Image (tube, rainbow, N blue to C red):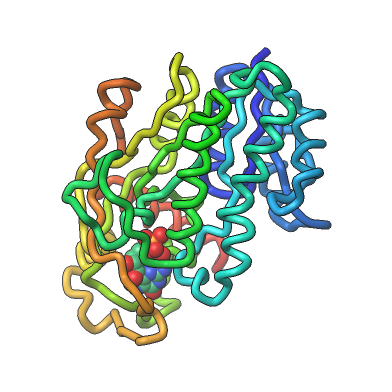
Length: 327
Ligand code: GDP
């Protein structure tokens, strides 16, 4: 039986990836942080077959213990402080977890692997936020990185450290540069889920307006369930490599609002949206659009869920959740 260790198991991607690996017959271990972590119950109810281990990306010895007890064939490093807006308030903590946490995990894998450097296959969750002030359109694996937030800078460190461990030690370490990916499991601080939750409350009459920041930013939004399949495919290749995972389409926050409101029968949302400087960022990433050609060709990966279907799926989920709450 193939064994996998997932850091960040309590997040959106951790849950989808655990479901995928369990469906393939893997034994799955998930790393959770902290004492009495409230999100453990979510993992236990969603993917009860996952074996939970305690550890912290900032604590190398806890990662070495997790490696020794799970003895994984594959490690998926999804754990991070991942909310861009928060990273200006917590730049040091973001660096400790999102940047140096990658180094700790790579070290734990290297030390566990002994004299067989490719014994464990390693996946690093890199991010389109690394492209920041984009130097090329669309963005591909070779595009110059220009991060625009402490989070983006931390992800650049993790990306290059993964490449460096591959080149220095011959580790089977791959980096997936995933563009924004969303789902009904997305945290409500991210703009997609914030919008779909608010639109469902507005449709049900329990909220009047939604308060947002910059409506003109553009993102390449895909479905998280599709993206975890790309992660798995990367680790099945003979050679480790880096891949952009994206849809190749870009949409603005305004278009997100158009699709979400139209789905509940509201065509003109101008009196339902308020802009507030609190939600603008010190430096913005204006445009992201990825070129997934390499992932398509080398991994045989294609996204299945398009932008409009994704937004409607999230609104439908939030309508059902809000109805349950008010009944
Ligand atoms: P990110 O791409 O990882 O930062 O994902 P987010 O979903 O947090 O933000 C996507 C874009 O939406 C960014 O350009 C934000 O500036 C923009 N945005 C506009 N209003 C909001 C808001 O109220 N919350 C968030 N999270 N983003 C907003």
